[in-house]
Length: 498
Image 1 (tube, rainbow, N blue to C red):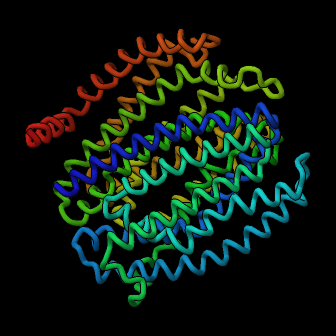
Image 2: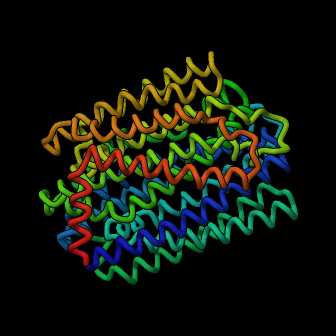
Image 3: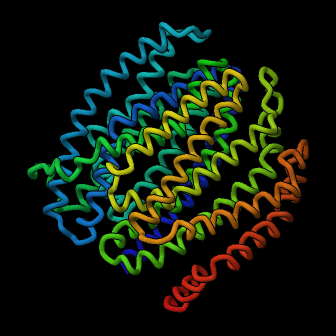
């Protein structure tokens, strides 16, 4: 019941946080476009992606620590958990110093070497202020966040993030409307983030009385951090390389176009990830404690996850282009209407989501070393194909490179997780993927991405409600026919709860 309660709290807090985040995340980019133009928006988007890459300094140890803690926290082995967290704490302190040095180098090079029309001193200060929240996290917060997530208390983090987003975005908007100062905008976020950091720090200290970071470090428990880093680097390449390559091989206006499209897709994906993370801690612990029950529930999870993501991205394929037209109306310094860009974004995100349940199996099992080569080849394919395709095809080429890499990674990940870990046929997964892909293709044959182009918002909303009903019903019906065992398990769980 404790886990049920935490799952419920995590889910509710995730939904609230994502609704707030999605509502606020579209305001600032629009204000940047109106006040500064597409070039400045492209520069700021590129800076943001550069710092996402810098998070790789902690990504390996973060996921390695998560995997190491699942069994220990599930069995309440706090002595061993302290040893893992002590090792993580030691690593984070060293990483924070390295991070600071790299930030200074990037700030100097990006501000004073790369040509742009923005004031160089202003760019330097923006980069430094952008880096400060992550620097604080390395030294104080990151290890506590990992512990809370593994313990199923993601709702505490979500609530703190919700307050942070509301307060910081209101502050940013006020500064932007009153002063047009990009430096003050970033300073507001730094101050708010520091306040949130202190709250989570004191919460963890009060909640986990057994926590002792001075325990003897168990570096062996996170020895796979380098292999994990390779996996995380591959994910970062998938999520963040495109806008950087576009800014270098095309221009910052093209980067701005990509960034605007990516806002819609990244917020939807963040919403999906946030909801799923509400209960993955329970799956991770169950994988090590009760494999029979895990295998049964995983079939349900995989079926519902693939079905839900297909529904969401199918609706985006049909209705997103007119939303982008409404969002960018009046911005004439770049062409933001691109039919094929929408379709490619949808296909890219569908393929990415198809492999995520299987990828979770590898994370639960901690088999990062054995699958490291998959991540390396994915990166090579992604960067190589993207560079060539961008040169010949522009923005769309970046996504084609990512799709090529995802197809490879999806095939090898699904095969490995099913055959090597779950000990079952990979057709169990492909049956679900093929059924949902056929429904997607059918709906794309009925509608194309520009079918509802140039409609007013309320007309679009009306069409969206009408067509969403039968699209959702069709997906549910097909999944029920092709995977009755998953729905049977759902009904059994429902009866047990009653």
